[in-house]
Image 1 (tube, rainbow, N blue to C red):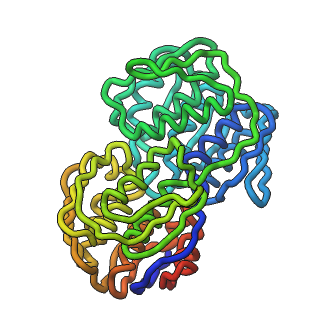
Image 2: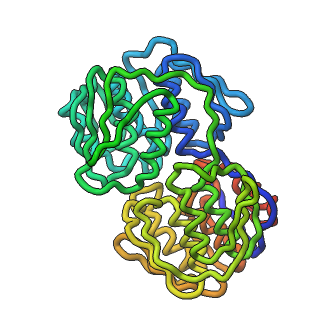
Image 3: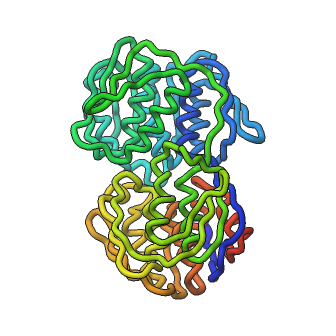
Length: 418
């Protein structure tokens, strides 16, 4: 475990955001299912991505890393049984469960941190009637067995989109057609759109219906040469840093991305940051920040970065429909409330969100990072307009962005990891 000492500063210059973690997970698993040789370019080997690559190896897939990605050869024979360590990656765990059922691989899944306690109820409800056994004492380890069968799968739209993605990855492999039907409006819809687009890139269809998707059976994933785009959710921390008085040019982002967190540009602009595109580079500078209302149902991963900037905006910001953040690597609503309050922010929790009354400047203090990469990066952005800040769990950024503090310092920040 490590702490970081942050001093007030200003970030300026050019930064290239890391590859999208969400896209990377999906591309790797599509390559695994393609049963051939694929090359995934522009991968960042964060802990979560390593968890998915190691899961691929546990399924008998050859993974060869190179300087800019990896070659995945899934033409070998699948094992009858596998032991898979999902690390702390919710995507790895939830994507794999129905995929294992579709492949007919009996597996024991383990994990670390808060992952063993994260909900799997949506699968416990919909998978056993379709041939898949889930056995555990309540969390992880989890044993998955049996063979997934085609049919109609009912899911509430308010659960994590990771459950929908797992089914979308698995159901095309089955012998017959299937339906996913949502019993309530879908939240985090952008992540599902990302999955459907990825399926199409690998030659697989999932057709939108009035209340879900129709997935034809008997499909085959086609091996691909695939390049991962930049991560809008990671760009949000630099958007926050720019909004708080910096001047940053952000490279690596697609303007036409289907990532749900593409909304970061719009939201920070509405908050008062000065943003604009210069060719394919997004520039963000400080502006007069003013509080606003934010419905976070579709963009939960942006909440920590938005809260950090809102803590230093004029007036009140109300963030709502973010209740699922209580079930992430930390309870992110509580973590941001406690962290910003410890630094002099005026912030309160609601059952599903935050109410933030902006202050002109934060003060020196000690804040907990809760071993949560997004909390640590968000509080590091807020500390640009604070005093001497000591923040715990600096090492947690390795989960998604191992080079974060190196880039932070290169751009003019003052972060001393101890």
